[in-house]
Image 1 (cartoon, rainbow, N blue to C red):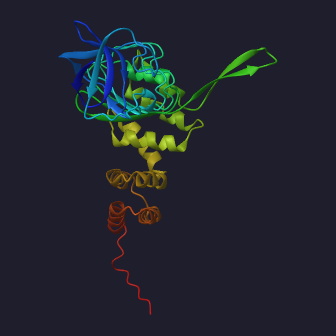
Image 2 (tube, helix red, strand yellow):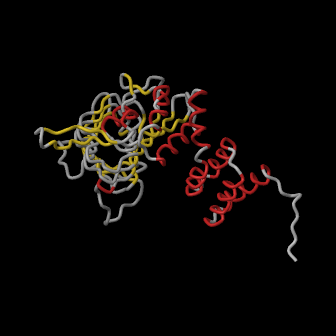
Image 3 (cartoon, rainbow, N blue to C red):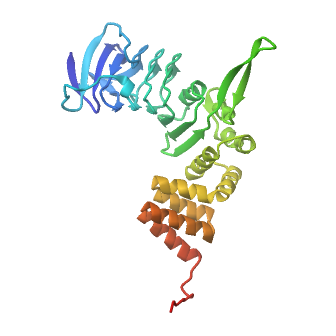
Length: 326
């Protein structure tokens, strides 16, 4: 087995081809790992069928050990423990059931160069809902549409485009259920949750921000989770890529009607820049500021508390009011 250095620990079985490396099998002992971008001077361009599926026998190939430091004898090479995965930047193809049963995987990072996802690549990745996509050109590939088609749960997606702009999009959850209709001797197909249109707002596998934002009012008119609505509006306002003035006004109106919830969420995240953005855009009233100050004080969030007190003093100065207790 050949040994090479890398940023993560992997046991690989590979096949060298003229245009690049195909990973036939990969197992890591890390909970957060990045597959190598290159091996032996060649780009890694393909994940084979069942490449990261735990316990799956790989076809014959060249064995490679990728290490980033000393390995203890207790290292567990089991992708069931893998929580965060970064795919190679030059990856073009992902084979059948490539990530099958990576049940702890919750975050996937990739470059939007992948032009083909095979069937069942994400099957039984029950925790996967966070994606970081870096676009490598002006053309939008099909990865985001694939994720939304395969996964009906809530998806939290960050996109960095070729110009360096960052967008963050929330695709709310929905459920597809077949329910037995005994009198009619058949099953009825029902959809629950307001997220279905968001998961299917793609035209020719490409996302339109205009279409995405156009779903907002209908979403609020359906049964939905207030927490998801708040985060959806927040991320569009915070990272307003291709955000029209009309959509911005609609999101901002919702945020201003839910400032206490937004402030509580941001305090729980210790997101001081986000809290500053909220104060500037939503302009909370005196009572909301007082409540937020109390929450920050109880949470020991001193930096956030200082920001809130400064904003309250600026918006509602009370220096002229003097009280004396005798």
